[in-house]
Structures are given as structure tokens and as C-alpha cells.
Image (cartoon, rainbow over all chains, first blue to last red):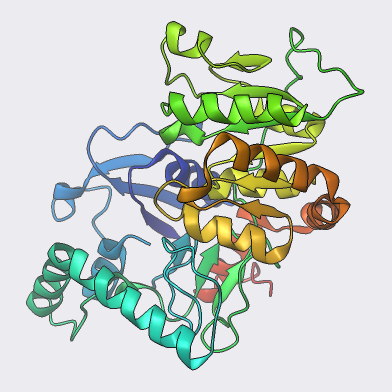
Length: 64
Length: 308
């Protein structure tokens, strides 16, 4: 499964989504963050971060 | 809880799961919007009040509504107007601990209350340079990461704790200057502390009622005195009071004497601690991120993974 995670760039939200992303990747899924450019993710299993404006053109996010 | 997710998922036709890191926005009769500290009230009067709150909120959120409507029309998604319209109708993953939120008998079947996705660092040690006197109550006071700069309120909390005869550790999340921190009349003032370890030792947490801190208090069995400031904190504080794990003070009750009185009230009445400890006893069963992914896999039918 490829999951796109979209959340506000607030630390408490990001930390929760990072935990979700880590669990997804631990189970072999792919987790991709779609958030504002420059948003700092602390997760060790840092998924791909895409600028919101790149939704249409970002290869990592383009459905296959 | 980000409307873009609902719009994009509908636009490209992929399954949508909502995640409520804070108080769920999903509408439910009798439950006010999360940023309102009103009580759960399904009576006609309560419904009228909540409807009034929603009208004001809709007015304040007009720029967001315009964007949602514009995108929904442009992408042929129908009449979507508000954040609530963009949420998943099938599955919301909530960080609420079971029993902490108000009951949602009408529209709540799709909301999974899983507890915090990210648990605190229980392995961190209590700071060696902080040695509370075990003979006196030990209070931990924090206004969270985003509100830690409120030096005046932190100082008032510290004064109130002294007035109540308890020891207090104030954490300001690195938001104060050294001079500001030194002006707080607490027993200990720190930029950061290992919150989980501190809560394991605390008799009471004076908090802004951020959901993460509230859930960490419940997991540690620590009662709370909530002083909500912004965002969904009024809603979290109302739930703290509603479930019996503590008291909350309204903005007009934040004088030193009122806070001191409330500190004593929570410490002197064992029911608050008992309630918090009841949550703590259940905390190992909170599913967190693992249960969240179970739900996601079940919702989109990943073979061999699905659990209820």
C-alpha cells in the first residue's frame, strides 16, 4: 500500500503522523508526507516529503 | 483533519481515512466544536447553543470555506463547504483514549479511539538535579510547546502552588529567556524535562490541556488542573472535567487565589486521582499507531492483515 499523509505543519500533529508513518513502513507499506515545504520531520524512518504545490508533478506522489 | 486530504482523495478517487490528532471535528448532536469549552448537552437548549457556535465558526472560517467550495466545484466533487464535509465518512482514527471523549452515539461509529500514536519516552530518567520532598505534593506545570512563552501565567501558577503549600516544577519548552525563567517563583524552572518521567512522579499536572499532555497524564494516572488557552484546549479541558480526571479553570478564573484553591481541590479529593489511575490501568490496551494501521489495512482490505 502507498499512503499519502497530509497534516497541518504543527509539531503535535506531525509527531502523531510520523508514528503512523513508521508503523506503515514497518509493515512494508510506503508512506509519503504531503506537507508544506520546509516542514521538519523528526522521524528516523523519514518518508518522502513533498511540497504541496508539487502534487501534480511530484514523481513520488503520482499514482501508478 | 486537513481539508486538503478529503478534497484530494475524492478528486483522485483513492480511499480516505481521517486522522484526529486533536479533538475530532466530526459532527455529533450535543457536542460543541472542539475549540469551545461548552459541556456536552444534547438537550434542545444545548443544540441551539452549539448551532450558534457553528454559525460563528462558519463566519470566521469563510476564507477556508471559499477555498473548499472552489476546489470541490472545480473537481466536480459536489457541494463541499466546510472542513467537516471533507472528513472521511468511513473511518476516523482518533488519538483520544477510550472513555475520554464524550459519547458519540449518533455519528461516532466510524471513529476509532486508539489513544496516542506516539507514546512518551518512559525510559528517560527523572532529572537528577530535581529532588522533590516526598512529604509534600509535587506539581508539574507546563503550557506546552506553543504556549510556553506565557511567562506571566507560568509565574502565577508557581505563586499559586506556593500558596497551596506544594512543590512545583515549571517547564517552559525553551520559550523563555533566562531572565524570564528566573522571575518565575517555582521550586524548579526548566526549559525542557522528560515529561513522561516527571509525570510518573507528579501528584498533579497543571496544564494548558493540549491533548498530548492530557493523554500522557491519563496514561500516568496523574490528575489535572486545566487552564486552556487556545486551539482545541477548551474542548480537551471540558473533557478532563467531564470524565472526572481533574478540574478546569475558565479564562476569568486564572487569578493566583483561584488557581491555588483549585490545586488544593484536586489534590485533596482522591476521586480525581482515582479516575486518572483508572485510565492508566487501561493504557497498555490502547492500540495507538499499530491499531491505527490495522484499521487502515482493514478499511482498504489488505489481505491477511485485517483486524477489528
